[in-house]
Image 1: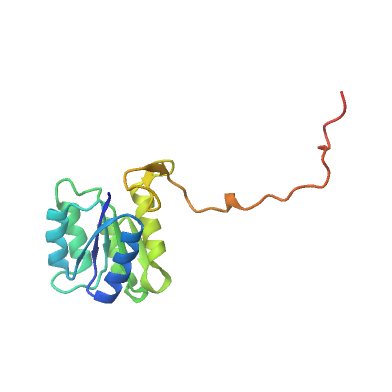
Image 2 (image 1 turned 90 degrees about the horizontal axis):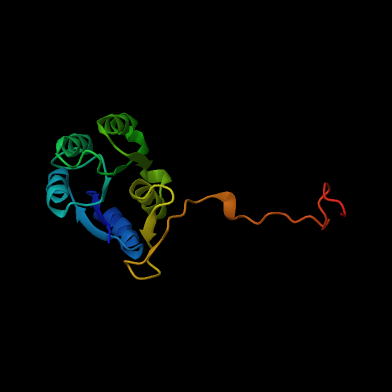
Length: 164
């Protein structure tokens, strides 16, 4: 079971996102501030982090810098999740090594789960789904329009195919 750490000082937001990740088959921990988040990154060893930027005790940007400086955590997927008005901080977080940046006002728990899955499982990788046993692998699927029905022509014989 993959582990996700949500570092968010708004307990209501953190719980909503944590519940969605749990439903999707992830083990989840929540840190209410930057320092607690850094401690949990070191001890819980999450597979991915959802990080708010405006945090007590240590900003998300400073936390990003600490994570990237930590041996073995250079490639840890960190999805920055913050308010749109913090664009300069989001840019700083990206420069510090954020994997992806999501705006709180334009995001949903489902989009956060998708962002984590994309970071953890490149296209074609194997992932566990919540509908089956946690250890049962299934192919990863990227959302696309490929599953839309294709219009069928009323002409049963293709134009370039003739009788033999």
